[in-house]
Image (cartoon, rainbow, N blue to C red; front, side, top):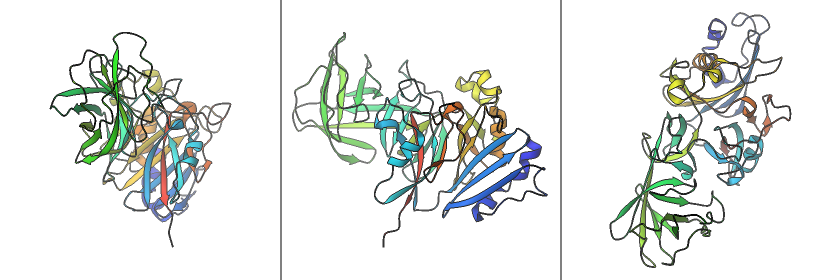
Length: 396
């Protein structure tokens, strides 16, 4: 495979100018590749490689352009929910943006809750601390910091709520149910109400109103000192703080300010976008498939067998971002092992790359159309979340 795909090592340069890759000289007989400009700085390439056979889609994005924005979108705007990638892409733009492309994101449970952490436009959709026994913090995540820098890391969530009297409590979960030994937070991604409290230990909950930010701290105001035992309405733009009934601390009296600190290590700076997946398969420009994925709990069968694949990566200087899909389970495209997928990424000039949910979930959308061929008999599969590339419209 590497002998055939190495001919594509200059793909980033060719895609930048939007040329059609030659079918003679550089590539074996029967192979073809075409590239077209979707938006200035955004190019979509389709590669048909007869060796697999493989049908490969690559989207290259110039992250230095200030009219482009990458965001995560949660299915149905709820922590539990499934929706097709194309549907999420269609509803994600605001009045000043257009959806240019999208790719499916994280693995998920049957009810659509993502396996990993998720952040959409600086709002945490789902998070669990490593001390939470239900947390899956070992998988790699792709993210963007507030200043637009991409990263791939096995992130760890941490949270702290500081009350007016100076006492503090650890936050174990956001939109992930309750934790008996720490606080939990719920926002609009959970739903209109927190879960009803029907089993011991009993809970105490306060609805808190957003009051701005200060550096890396979010400020909230206590609108009412009355607390409830679950089924608490989530205020628009606010949160619900939930803790065990035996906890000593409370938010305080009406009008008091509560400070909340949330973060993901080792990300440098505030996280703007975050989606789980894994494993990481490219590290510093070389394949680590076959070694790195075992550290993330990946089953050998998942790694070695050929499946449809989705992945994301970026160049060594972090200026180029790549969406990559490989169709599979079809006569026209056999899918790839993780080792093959990693070699493919390296041949594109990807320095840091990771696998996303694949199989029947593998979907790439360009300008509103599903451009790859999803493997499910029913067609495009409803998934938990996706990454959407938005272009800012010109305003005259």
